Length: 172
Image (cartoon, rainbow, N blue to C red):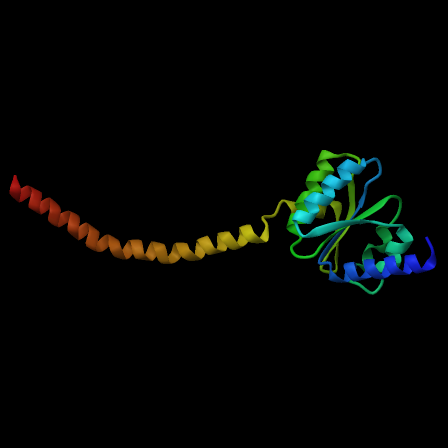
């Protein structure tokens, strides 16, 4: 690989790290290509990607980005998973993959400039996704007016039951 190719890779990686909201550094030593492709596919479905590059190129690429503190984690065989929207989806995929394949281990992560440990990524994976939280919020917001309508409709309904009971009593 010549100097121009390395420069292109660094600039491409730097652009990717600049757009990232969530990045996870992992060790993939011992994984088969098919297993890594399975991880790539699962991450793509969650608006994330995984990059494998030389550690020196990764250290140069994170300079000047919010992911700069990940530079200390780049050693050995390094893969970087990068999420662009919400962090919970990629965290769930990575945590599940790490439990399924022992050869894959999470080293550290960064979320909006905050450095996270591997345990923090696992804890993040156990949170509900953004869509689930929005659905719960919407359910809670719609439950209040629905309950209010039921309370208001109960008064005439009970009056109707009482009148119906009086009618049945007079007919007998």
